[in-house]
Image (cartoon, rainbow, N blue to C red; front, top):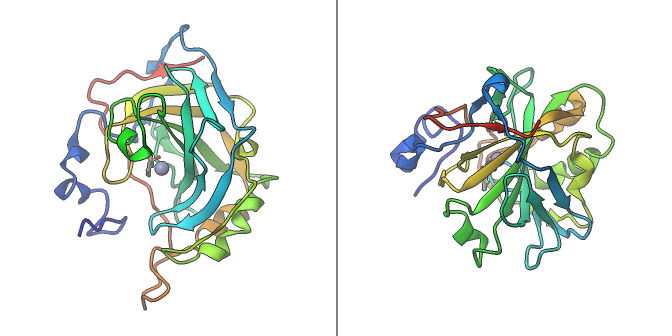
Length: 260
Ligand SMILES: NS(=O)(=O)c1c(F)cccc1F
Ligand SMILES: [Zn+2]
């Protein structure tokens, strides 16, 4: 089937064979060049209303670790900034590197961060389901937050302490009462541009909002993500889950705007 991964034969350079949109005009991630990003005074602040968010579970989907949310109503939404509607929080997940290697997807002037958190939201005003929104040009809004190693993050342990329960592909465990607002940096200044999912099917359906200020996590916390494996418990191969990032794609004339 359409098996894809991050290895030599099934990784980002091979995705175009099953997903030709990989060579499309609005692919993500990109390299962000701050002094070429146009400051747009009409870009208001990002507003997050996560106070009644309901996390459901944490899972290893064979590509990343994902925390899913209840999205049957507008209990947790992002709005403002470049968005014309409120977008509902569906899930968040991470991308990271190997030991001593950086693993963010977006880069800033060619520099990558250690990791990147993606909070995935969908336009429930215009579409009935996430699946439908995921293939529409204004269907998704993903908030990207860089992770940089330094001091320990006071709340990330709530996630890293649960990772041992989802070591293998296909594992899912309860994960209630987590509010991702605790992961956000103090400033929500951002860059924004029109792009795509960074994993197959690579739909060009994402309004990207990349926060400028990274969240700081410890080496030890980041190392726990690398205890996950891409493979299922029943497989004899144990392939460490790391370097699950797509490299930057061509801008193809797109403009990146800056909030300020
Ligand atoms: N990486 S990403 O944020 O573009 C992304 C999505 F938005 C949706 C599904 C999977 C996924 F990986
Ligand atoms: Zn992602």
